[in-house]
Image (tube, rainbow, N blue to C red; front, side, top):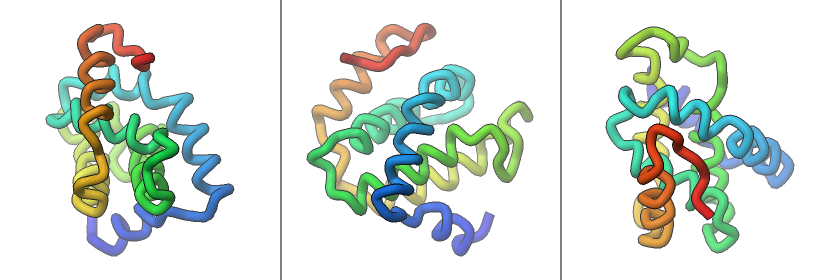
Length: 129
C-alpha cells in the first residue's frame, strides 16, 4: 500500500463526510474489533482512537483523520479482505499507523481509561460508558 493511497484515505473530509464516517464507525467498530483482536497488535490504541474520534473536544481535523482511518478499518471490503488469516488486517494496520502518526498527542489519558474499561470485558468487547 503506497503513501499516496494512505494519504487519500486519511483526508478528514467536510462535516457531512465526517458525520457519515462517524455513523459507519459507531455501527461497525465493535463487531470488527472483536474479529480483529488477535491480529491487530495495538488494540488498546485503536479503542482509545475510537473514543478520541467521538470526543467533541477533539479538534475537527483530528476527528476527521481518525474517523477516516476507523471507517477504513470497519469497511467490509478493502485492499486485502479481512478474512484472510494474518494478512487480512495488514492494510488496516498501515492506515491506522499513518493516522496515529498524523494525530500524535491528541489521544488523551481519558481515552485510554475508556479503552481499558471497554477491553476489560474481552471477549465481549462493548463500548464503555
